[in-house]
Structures are given as C-alpha cells and as structure tokens.
Image 1 (cartoon, rainbow, N blue to C red):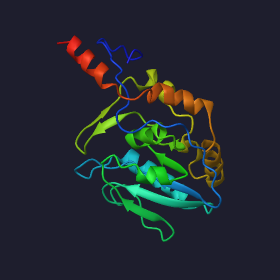
Image 2 (tube, one colour; image 1 turned 90 degrees about the horizontal axis):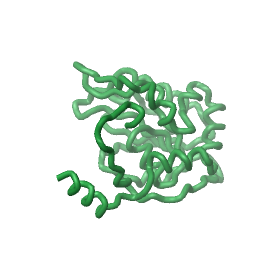
Image 3 (spheres, one colour; image 1 turned 30 degrees about the vertical axis):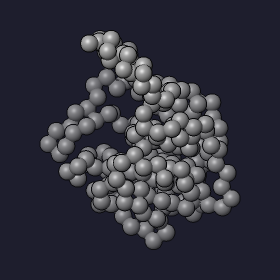
Length: 211
C-alpha cells in the first residue's frame, strides 16, 4: 500500500483462511502428484480471455508430462475455464468454499490468488500462475485494470512461476522438483504475504480505536 501511495492507515491483523504450517518438502516415490487449480470464472460464468488462454496453455503443458499424476480442481465448467477432458487426468468439480483437502493430498500445486496463498500458508509446495498479467476484475461488459501494477509487481511475485515454463514440459518438471524443496526465497515471501495468524483481540482493539 505504501508503494502505491495509499493515504489511509493500514492495519495488519493476521491470516484468516487456514492454519499456518511449516514447509513440507515433497519426495515422491513415483509420479509427482500435481494439483492444477485453474483461474475460475465469476458467478455469471464469464472469464476474461487472457485468463482463459493462460489456463489453456498451462493445461496443454501439463498433459504432455508423463512424469506427473495430474488432478484438476476447477470451479464452474471445464468449458468456462477453457479446459477439456483427458483420459489420464483426474477432475474434481470444486466450490469456492475454502476446501484444502486436495491441496494437502498433492505433492505440488499450480494455482493463483486465494487458492495459491492457502497452499503456501499450509506449507505445501507451490508454482504460481497469473502474476504476469496486470491485475483485473469485472465482467464481459467492463474490466477494471490495476493502474499502478508496475510499482509493486516485482515485490509481489512468487519465486516459482509456471509462465517461465509454458510449452516446455522438461523445464516445467525441473521447476516442480526445485519447488518441492525448501527455499529461502519462498520462506521470505511467506513471511511478507502470509505473515502471522489472525489476532482477534488486536483486530477488535484496532477497530474500536477508530470509532
């Protein structure tokens, strides 16, 4: 918020979505269990084309990797996410309900936004997606774009990004292997963007201080 010149006080009251756990190194015996959670549409079913294209290219890369056991957890429909059925892929129709079961069962997760941050908080290996496009929100008639992205995008970016290995299965496999190991860069990112657990007493105190 300081980087974009936000003029009002900012209070940090802690992480609320999940437990915060230490990093859990993955050491698969056989194939790597990969959970892919594509960017999902809004309630109307609309997903902007730039996100549909990213989902498509990531999935195309993953289905051509014989060394992984791929699960796709999607919200909406496969068509809305710009994905398709493959016989060797497991599909789970998810809900935006904060479920972490599939995260905890995977060796590594590829996702974005809330789902990705939950993965890091739970200590599971992650490869991020969606950070190479300007932040946006909206529907088919209007999309608002983050106007000051350049001021914070490098600070915000996660150490492992699948966009660095699109359409390169061998490079994507190496990234997975690296991301499943402990990383000082990941720990620093986690300290900055996950932080500490929610502190309800502090939260109440800060709210009351503004009344």
